[in-house]
Amino acid sequence: MENKEIAALLYQTADLMEIAGEDPFRIRSYRNGAAAVESYPRRIAEIAADPEGDLTAIPGIGKGLAAVLKDIVARGSFERRDVLLEKYPPTALELLKIQGLGPKSIALLYEHYRVSTIDDLERICREGLLRQLPRMGEKLELKVLRSIELYKRSAGRFLLDYADRMAAELVAYLSQTPGVESVTPAGSLRRGKETIGDVDLLVTGPDPAPALARFVEYPRVGEVLAKGENKASAKIGPEGLQVDVRVLDRSSFGSALQYFTGSKDHNVALRNRAIRMGFKLSEYGLFRAEDDTRIAGTTEEEIYLKLNLKWIPPELRENNGEIEAAAEGRLPALVELTHIRGDLHAHTIATDGRNTIPEMADAARATGYQYLAITDHSKALAMANGLDEKRLVAQIAEIHRFAADFPGLTLLAGCECDIRQDGSMDLDNEALAQLDVVVGSVHSYMNMESAQMTDRLLRALENPHLTILGHPTGRLLLRRDAFPYDVEKVFDAAARCGVHLEINASPERLDLSSNLLRMAKAKGIRFVISTDAHHVQHLENMKYGVLMARRGWLGPEDIINTRDASGLPAALRRK
Image (cartoon, rainbow, N blue to C red; front, top):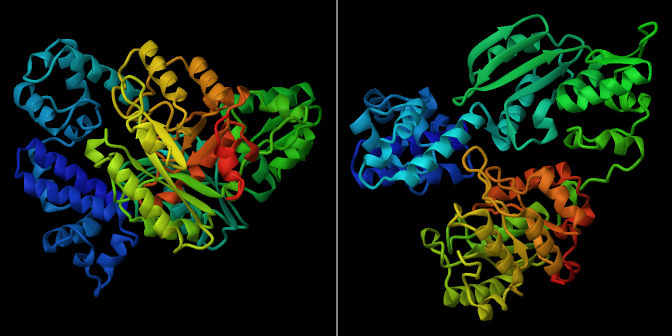
């Protein structure tokens, strides 16, 4: 079990304890323990399995929680959780995924109406019964119904980083099978989609069939859905991610990889092109239609070449003009992770981060970066202990003091400054003027009407100190839709003011989406790929931001933080 999965069980149990009205101190200890586990650099499972491993050495983990962690590693649950799940059905945990409801609200719904499923909740809302409960009303009822709709649309889908970790784990596991030459992810994971429905793995080698037997024996397999001569499917991990493993001959690897990578629309367009040229294209190869002679299939490149196309990067395969661009030699040279020279959005323990300035700087330097911007929250985000003007000025001085300790790394003083409801910035201009980077973000009042939100963002963009518009649509994947505004107006204003748009690489956000990136690029806007790191490990999420940029047809020239440290100040400067 990975640390994030263990932490999820602790968080869930704390929520169940709150629903049950248990001691707040114990609830808080479980949440603190979950946070400690989630951010701990070593695998908890390895420490628990080591006879000399000491889980109490982890800050925030006492003897009681250490015993709980050992139980989780051993059997995937623990006694307190088991007892609570006897009192409340497992479906009650689903209710916590509905925006607008917390544990206390769920306890009230269960007490009055015995609501324990999403369907129960939807029925109660549609009957107008939720508004009759204390501290609830018609607005909350409508908000819950919208959230239920989003939840149902996204059910069975997983964040990109989770699917990526599961795939990497399985690739390493299956690669150890005798007779296996290669294990390659395909599908929407290879295309870098924001959320993933299932994972496709293609296995090749002289005798790859044993890989199927080894796959269904994988310790994290929860349910085997099917197993045949060439394919096996199973649900993996506690969340039940479906993984399909296919074995195939090396000679058809390229055509199978192209076919199973998709997208469906891209494949249909490619097959139609093949038909017009007198060919037939399938997962087994490219064939001459008149006599079924196989002319390509070992690699993807040769398939595209035979169809008079440049090879198309997987991230572009959505039938959004990539085939025409490949035919005309207009495919962009896409940005790569190796182009990134630094991160311009990171948090520390000064607000809601988990690491100090030196720890974040050390991790950035170890990553090979030339610069790192420290951008803690501003005062409006009280729950994150946001900085007021006085604390911000003190932190700027602190950043400058630490800068000398990290030769080869430029430490930039920044702030993630809240954009208030009226569009003004949360800190005064005198303080903002002292910063190298100002990331302006919306964290509140996200239910405004589109016209109001548009005016709010337009006013923020006019502030002369705003450098970057952070996570520009506010979406949280699988949890919250983007807030509405006139994208054309806001992007036009960003281009006019010279404000850069952030591509937030946090797997929960991946904001902006590919279609908005292409729209913004067409207006001449430049971008910053940032991790929004709250822990040193989050710096590794940069690769997901790069994937989003690639899906948006962006090259290194479109991304500000591909510049080296000497060229960054000029690139950041507003027009």
